[in-house]
Image 1 (cartoon, one colour):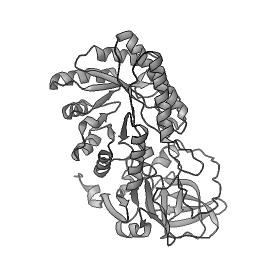
Image 2 (spheres, one colour):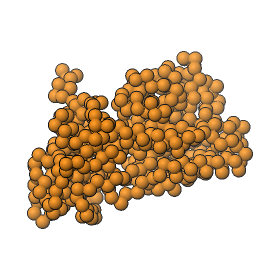
Image 3 (cartoon, one colour):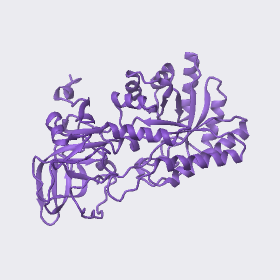
Image 4 (cartoon, helix red, strand yellow):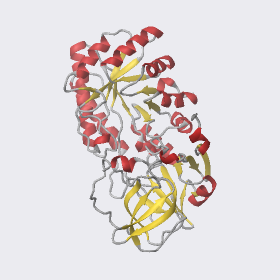
Length: 450
């Protein structure tokens, strides 16, 4: 059985109104007009007609407004957008224009940023297994920070710094031992996993010693990331407290005061009714208070805080449009509604049991609700977009279905299973739509084959 998909799961409650759009789950400019869902002032029927389906739709104003909220909440620190959530050249431009930094974790993500002249000094390079070539590129272009993840990487960076005559700023990724309340595949702060250097074992402290012994490297701070899709602030608070204490220990052992503390991201968003979401200002105030208290009690200056939101900026801003195809009633169980995409454009449900909200988007319906499973067209029984939901009983082939909350980790994880081309990405704003990633073609799929 696919990991993360339990055999039995409580059925969702029947929605009071199958046509309603829960504000916390849908983009801020979404609504209905003439029965159809609209995003950015545009009817989804018009989007489907012009650009085809499946189609990723990004509400530009929603995305930008969340960037501004983070900047305001962390006005005395730094906000770096986590590129892995969703990145393309246009999104990199938005991030730059809104004054955020950018986190990348591969040469490819770095190349996207540099292709639109994103300021390299506002880029942080992550990754648990950065190649020598990736590190060299980061050093050559002068990224603002490199987050080291192993002893080997410290040595590689020392070599490259010598080679190029530069002194890169580095941070240490610390595994703080927090058990984040999320799926095991996206929890990243316990000791038994691939990321970071353990606080409890002393590996993080040893990394500090090794970096300080290399004059080629400038150690400026500590970094932590406890996981993804987390809606309980407790884990972030524990991580902040432990990192602040490590700053104190570094001062006591080395008489060195590190000026920066990066507390990562992972802030969750609501995907279905009843899901919790985190208030950005509450997060900022809470983290700031904890770090300030620990540092001031030890006589240390309060470090500059950085956070790395990705999903909580991009997630709700994105919606995926599908066209319904086969509608198959399995008597006594449920109705299977097949769409023209699936695990190639959204693998999260198959990967770790992600849940979503979906609605009939091309019209309203007063038909009775039917227990449904929204499935894709791939040759896998685990090819599900939404495992359990209620859709109107009169749903038919040709209807458009919109799935909310797909702005993060859907296009980023997209694939070509069964040789399906990846969908286009369209940005909408003030009644205008434009392609920011074009739809793949069969020629694209064949390119590179001999």
